[in-house]
Length: 450
Image 1: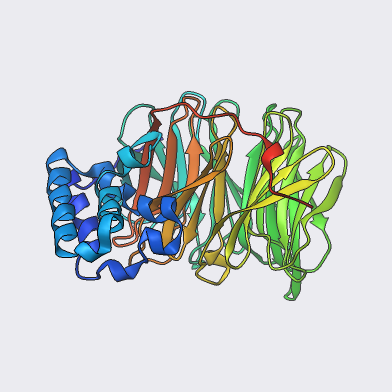
Image 2: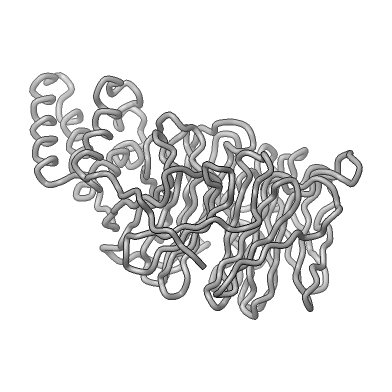
């Protein structure tokens, strides 16, 4: 395959830092967000400066520190709290005890509907919808900052803007991508060339999200939202297909009305398929387990108003863990042998519409979950440190309201968070290299059981 090297390098560190400083604390002023000590979300609001500190040169930090001291002198009535806020802004990695060293990379000049995955060797793979409405594939060799990109042939979106893409890797590290340009398409790379096919043709309109996962034996699975029926009319159910003996075998998972507009899929070590999806009319998060013969469907969260933007993973014990959103909350569900333990990760502000609900997650080598999501146009990173949830701001809000974020973690614990830049629309990846060890995750600390 022919890959094109990225012609768009990351912005100079000093310039990037200055742009972020001007946007956060310049003409728009500190009133854009409440100070940390007012909101009570100290870790979140203080860490809003993480992106500044990531790329700021030492000389810039000294200048920023002087600005902090001058601000304290100019507003002595604010006391030590005001100076502390500025100190967080300048030296967040030191004051907040960050466990990663962050850098930034640019993949392409424009893109959305981003999905990212890391293989066992630490190479990165990405699918995204480019500015010309073609699906592109990005590849980054391990331990290098350079991205190579190419169009996936046979994947025009046919006018379907914001069409989602999802990527997964097979045991050989080859990428598989699903997309929904009115039909369900599946693109796979065999190491030499791309093959693109339509799954379950002639079934009517396919829209909204799809998800793909590959079993340890290489068996390919896809779930999607079947919107319509042939000749018009609505279907509105979540479906699943598995490739068996060269033929895609498709069936409906749940016949309840409007199920699966937001869906996710994961496969455990035994090859069993775990799927999560929303039941929109009832406001529920649902979970389905495929044992190779039939689906077993249950309700994770029946409280109403939720299930959107869900993401499921299976931990080392074979139990599912799910991130998802209500209108104003990011929630997390831990599966136990007898029930689900559900807790609130963060209060959030969604953008509304189906694009406004999005969470993606990955597990680090210790089994701790890391979630990326959007909060009022900003990209944030929530992680479980073994005893509780911590929040970091990855990228501040800007002109673009939908950020299409995703996350991958390699075997060394390096975090890769992909998103659309809020101001220039480019595809970015921030890379977090671990500096301190993490505790091991446990569901026993769940706050609420249902």
